[in-house]
Image (cartoon, rainbow, N blue to C red; front, side, top):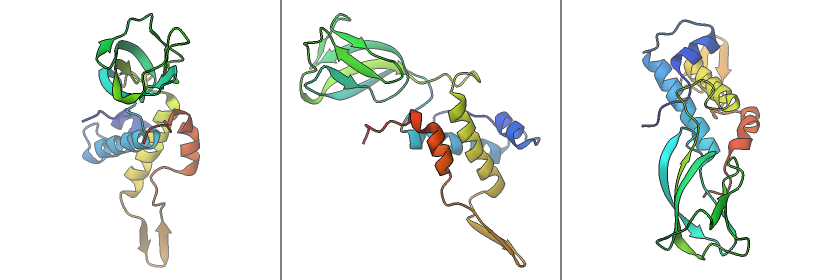
Length: 185
């Protein structure tokens, strides 16, 4: 199970309420809200060390790593043969493109023929680890889960209220679109 990147303490502070840190609804709201943001961004977000991925060779000098930001790139293999660090370079770690070097080299075309071991994501153990824009959107989602639960419509007497079917609003999506990976299927 992947740990939430917001806590019940964060939720309590955002709601200006006292919530027991072991409150089941609070834990569920933080976990669900973190996952909603992960799903939207198509990113793990939490720090993952030595993740091994198989990528399709592109027959170009560039190949995209699926998870951001890149903290460190370990071994890179093409068709089972390890490349030296002189044969590839990482561009901007926030974009995640591995380039073949020299510039005239290409990633061999093929399916799942490039294996990369790398570390990516942000530390969730420190409040400054995960970017604040991701955390605040997750907190807004958690606040809605806490306040409304899973109901879409409720009514008492002549009063009724309807809630959005979407846990993440269009404005919140715009806030975190920067972190969304669009090249993944």
